Length: 126
Image 1 (tube, one colour):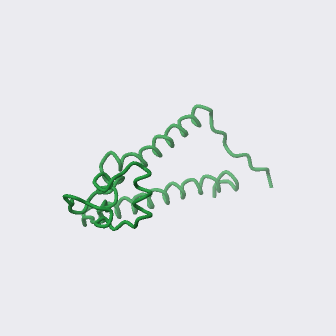
Image 2 (image 1 turned 90 degrees about the vertical axis):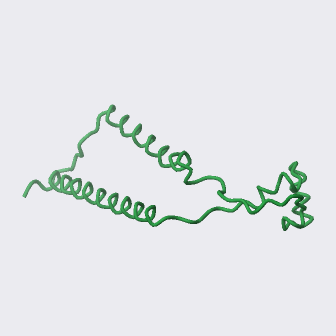
């Protein structure tokens, strides 16, 4: 059986591949932040006019740590009571399902064609 020599990729093609992958990576990481879909907490519990460490549910040890970081009960209020908003819409869920399924189909199609090319290069066309 002949030794298999895979096709070579040029330097420009490799550079384009790397640039596209970097752009896709940054897009996947930063687009949700820019669209406000990820990141910091979305909701804060009702504001207390005069919060104390006890009303914020902090122990004396926790209060001491916050004070060591330069916080007082009023400035730490939003930090301590911030909660993530886990609600979602049916449209967003359906859109995500469609995107995942289309991505899966795309990967299967590309994998099938590349697999057939490798088999044809290795064993010839049948």
